[in-house]
Amino acid sequence: MANLENIKARKTLDQIQPYSPGKPIWEVQEELGLERVIKLASNENPLGPSKKAVAAIEQGVLGLNRYPDADASDLKMAIAKEHGVEKNQVIPTNGADELITLISEAFLEQGDEIVVPDPSFSEYDFGAHIMGAKVVKVPFAQGFAFDVDAMIAAVTDKTKIIYICSPNNPTGTYMKKQDVQKLLDAVGDILVVFDAAYSHYADADDYTDGTEFIRQGYPLLTLKTFSKIYGIAGVRVGFGIAADSIITSILKVKEPFNVNTLAQLAATAAVTDHEHVTQSREANSRGREFLYEAFEELGLPYTKSMANFVLVKLGEEGEALYQDLMKKGVIVRYGKGWGLPEYVRVSVGTEEENEFFVEALRELIQK
Ligand SMILES: *Cc1c(COP(=O)(O)O)cnc(C)c1O
Image (cartoon, rainbow, N blue to C red; front, side, top):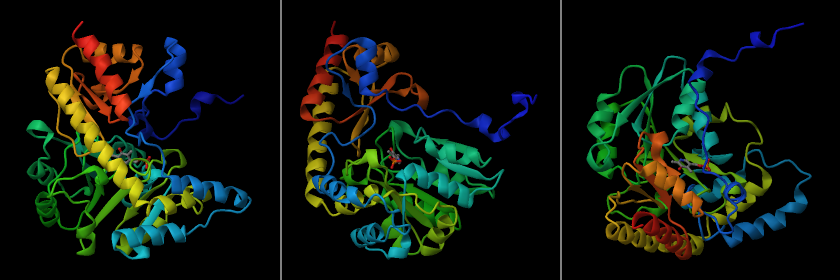
């Protein structure tokens, strides 16, 4: 009889920490016997999906006996048009998470390094670890501002990818356009992956989603997702935009039918639903302001955000308050996993959800 203990996975998998998603609503409802539970933990669009996307899915259901378009041609075209790039500069993927894995598979050899700001989105580390590459973390400066000089200084001859998440998850801070320019000019021939998952929410004049640098010929890949402002996280679509030579390399490791038919139809409709985007952006700006005011009133330090979430410091009681909020039916994201045990990240919800959250927090703090 064979010994199962001799069936060993690759060594590098020891480095991988399981992803911890926000707890689902049903689980908290069941565990705590609560009627009303709101989830402000995954930065989803609280207004729901684009109605045009929903209609496109309904139309598409009857064609499900067919395989998806392996080239996702209509979706590529729609994305290219929206961003002022060519169709062959676009790659749609099964969520932007898949794109991060594909980029890692295409560009990282064992022993290579990636440079990432810290704290940031955990999937960059995941991608590096599955390839046996090393993660070089660069802490933020005061107020979670990007430290562009430190990022440049972290580059070695082993660096293959520099990640910039802007606006950054979980801090909500962004890298100013002139700093992106400075970094690109300083590092030369290194792939810069610019994660602009939250770009639609950023309203600073000196914000860039990176695409202007692609048009100028820099080795930068902008990554975006349909899971946030477009409100279709459940069907899983993300995409990358870069020079066609970079896209061609990533296409080599992609599975043929990675984006399913309904996802392609929904995303193609959503990308031109400007009304839904505008409404969502405006509702988010109001929600952010509402949260800022509430935090000020409660004396809680927070970081101004260019995204649809706010990082707030609850102090030494952080973990207890996070748990107590859950008991009151509010799921937020606890900061410990990012090395921020005194913080939580709260997604901007509907007006009603924001009020429910603030009321729960007020009761806990002022009790
Ligand atoms: C949500 C998110 C993504 C992508 O999510 P998908 O649902 O996989 O498309 C990418 N980057 C950041 C920083 C995110 O927060």
